[in-house]
Length: 511
Image (tube, rainbow, N blue to C red):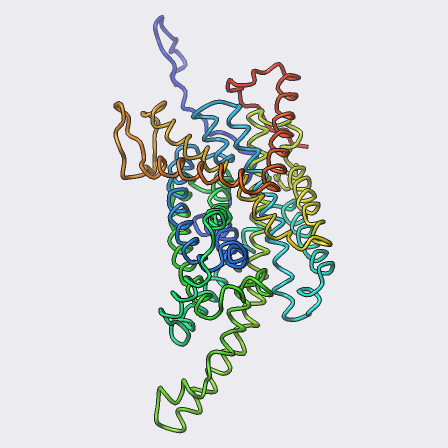
């Protein structure tokens, strides 16, 4: 600039806005995000299939189909919300922008509950699959529960070190898992599937209406991966573009694989078989059933009349049938470990966001000076998940009860997420939306997404039904929410902050 220049009265100075500093490292692309989300969504079929079968019996494929439709609604709402508000927090962030801090705190605490339960239930299912190699892991409640606790503790240490190490683990296992599920579906379609048998089993073991609705509620455990992607938006490169892409990719892959695995399962097994000894490891049960149903020599003879060719085909098929149970045991365990890891990643980032917006004490959101991770929240919630596993030593129905607890927290959070997206369409119609849900309805001059409208209605109704028919989920869930509300009120009063109005963002401290 010329040294002789001097400002004149009326001159205006405009500074280019600086990029906001983020204490968390941006390392994730589309595939890294997909892998983290798939860790929860894709993994849920490894235990949700058996869990839903315990509740909905023959209606399990129908229940998963209904849950899949709701999954589409939820994924689309999160795609719009995350692209519009690319910050950790998920439905809590949406509620904060759309409504107020009180509802944001409610959504955040409900999400924290569902994350903790997901961490516990995913780790709880791992030993059952590893029981293929050492039977006590599946047969002994004490050994299996202790192993699950060890998994959570190990992943706690991994997440304290940093997300980059975790994302590499996620990506590798996600690819192997997709390949394994495709192999199971192909074997079922070629050698096991019989539409008449499938429909007979569905009809013969159809549940009551209350069991059907509770089954749909529990099947929504697939939604958690949607939240995981949203929580990781602040560690994502170009989040307004990559987050919606990862959500859409995950939606497509998961729906295809869920449908195929559900059909394969009820073609190979009856509902009572899946709901008994294979409830915690249903995919292992499918692989085991293949060996009893598929006779390699008969299949080979039907494909060729040449004796030499028959021998080769029979040998290849026999080897595959022996290999599949081993492959399922290894990869089911690894993808469930991914789910546990993704849950820890998601809930720690959620706490980071809640603390930054003064919805929780800021001490929980402190970032490690070296690893740049919210290590305090990682440690805290991992320990809570370990405590949730303690009943596994003596309670036979802990699996179903964990499913009910998850349904309570997740359905409440997702109902608030849908409502927030609708509210933002009314409150901030001019707000930039890099991804906008199509298929809208006009109401009083406002453009509302039909998927969010249907999503909030159905999700809220199912949540109310769960609260009515599941006393364990009702009392534990409301107890958790009451504790969270108490923490919120005490914290805001001590800070002289309003309970409802939006508080200013504060800087996250680094130890």
